Length: 287
Ligand SMILES: [Zn+2]
Image (cartoon, rainbow, N blue to C red):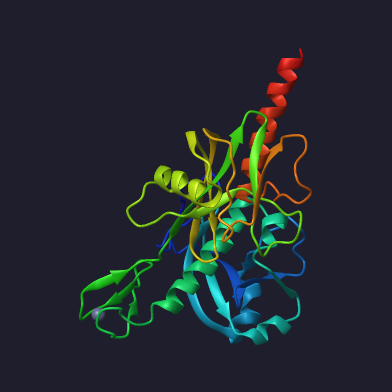
C-alpha cells in the first residue's frame, strides 16, 4: 500500500498501514539501541529481520508511524539487550548532533510514547487499570468511559534583542561562562505571547514587544514542545530573579559568551538567527 510522502520522511501516524517491510526503533532505558554498522547520519532504524535477534528482550511494542511510507514500531527492550552484539546504545540527547531532525523527532516520539504509557497504567479518577487502545495511542478506562492521550507540555523560548545586542542568561547550576536564551513553561490558560511577557519580566525584569515566531522543536524531557521566538526589548535594565537565572547580560552579536548552545537545539537556532540578522545589518550599514 502506498502512502503520501511527508516532508520530513516521518509520519507520526497512530495507525498501521501493514506494509510488507517493517522497521524497528529499539529503546533501552530512554536511550536508543542502533546497529553498529550504522555510521553517523545513518538511520536509527533496524530492519525487522535484523531486529529478530532482539525479540527475546522486548517488553513492549508500539506503533510509531511510518518512515518513508513503511510501518515503524518502537520496541522497549530490557537492559540486558545492551550486551547484544552488532548493536550499540546511543544517548537520545547525542542524536541531536549525529542524526537529522526527522530522525530525532522519531526517537523523541518513541521515548515519549513509552514514558507516557508507563505513567498512565491506572485511571486518575477511579483507580482502575487502564487499557491500551488498539486503534490509536490512548489509554482507556472503561468504567469512566475516558481516554487519555499522550500529553505535550508547551514551552516558550526567546532571544530578546536590543539593536545589535541580545540578552543571554545563565542558570545557577550551570558552569561559569555558559549562557543561553530564556525559556519557560506556558501556564494553564495563558497564550504563548502572555507566557513570553511573563517569563522575561519574571526572570530578568525586562519588558518586550514585537514578538516574532521562529519555529518549534519537540523536546523529550519529557513531552515538551519548544516554541521559539525573537522579541525586541522595550526596557534594558536587567534585574535577575536569582532563582532560575543567576546572571544575564546584553551580548553583542560578534562578542558572544564562550559557551552558547549549538543551532541543532532551539535556543541555539534562535541565537544563530539573531547573529545572522545582526551581521547582515552591520554589513549593509558599512556599504
Ligand atoms: Zn476510571
